Length: 163
Image 1: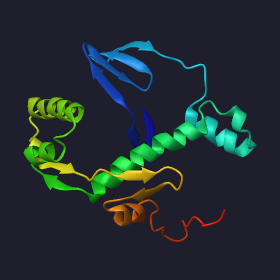
Image 2: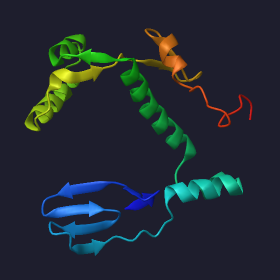
Image 3: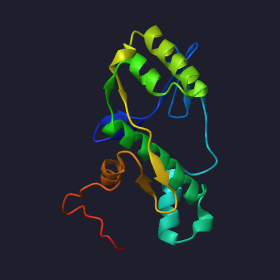
Image 4: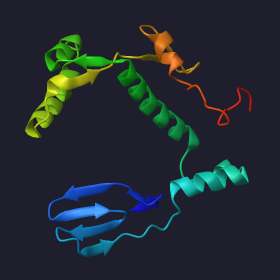
């Protein structure tokens, strides 16, 4: 695990017979079974090094792919922030025209119920449409969604419009 200000953070994967944390596999009793060593630097360090060197060809991951991936994550978060609590039946009714979506939602609902989570307490956000050329939302709730794209910065942590 990594630490920040005395707090541990990271990802822990629990599985049959133990868990994996920070590139190490442990048995159920916490005994180290195996350590996985990477031959390449962390993507975070590589990104910072690439920014400092100004050499895009030194990056281990394509920067456009990172931008697009982060954009999808932000889109989901913005939809969630614009959403409202809704019973599972109402969520299904809103999306009844997509058989694939309904099938995925049924599996999701079964997973929640199997873990003692009430699926009627879910937040359902709107479907957002993105204009990829302008990277702005269009259609229903686009004004509210676009207002969440760039936060109101707190001084002195302000990012200028033109860098």
